[in-house]
Image (cartoon, rainbow, N blue to C red):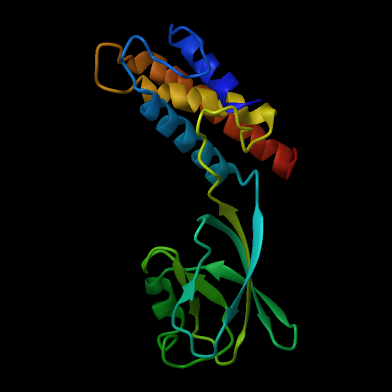
Length: 209
């Protein structure tokens, strides 16, 4: 499905003349507002379900106190520390408080990393716990920020099976805007429909248990 086709569906649901999202005669929403909501819905679905995962490798120097994440990083899925001898150690997430409790000297006494902390540092960076004693490579599986939808007929960055979730997430966001067409009841229904898509995606990825 193209972005214009999805925008037409949004217009139909909001009683606007469907024209691929080019115009919004009611003036309750602007074209830019709708595109903002659509892009936010796509990012939220990717972040919450891990439908599309990107792999990257980052060289890390010995004693590095901070590691830069890819500029398109939205969320971390999994990290592995690989030594120059190709020994691999899966890394779990911690915050600085947990790291201080488990390894009080983790920032000053270098060793082979066992975890990573990315909640309390600068944006798009993380710290390895403990600080690496030797150089190595960080193998990163992450959710990448997709290119923004522009409404010019481009392909959407998701399989068609999951676009209903994006549609309802966008509708829910638009219907919460303070104004004459604000509709909390319909917005809540749309949010429930978006959550159903998230649940379906998680089942497809993880399987039935």
